[in-house]
Length: 112
Image 1 (tube, rainbow, N blue to C red):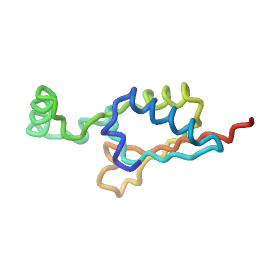
Image 2 (spheres, one colour):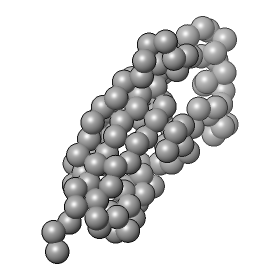
Image 3 (spheres, one colour):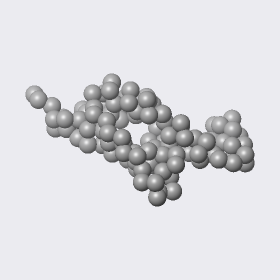
Image 4 (tube, rainbow, N blue to C red):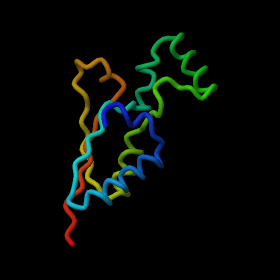
């Protein structure tokens, strides 16, 4: 899922992993790319004009980026879902590296 997690809420992310585990009983690797990092939000909204636009959009419910995520949120969902998490920070040459991250979730094969 590249640039897609921003379209989901935390409860939906949990549901995605629940379904992935259900249909992927043989194990899976799930890559999530270019996730907006809330701890770096002001690296993106880095001018007074952009900050004003952010607050305007928040008040209207039309935030341009979508859902911003904190790494501890991702860690919690991964832990509670029983999947391994590997952080993959973006290459600094990417234009999104100053406010987004990547990660990989892995579920090992079930032993039935």
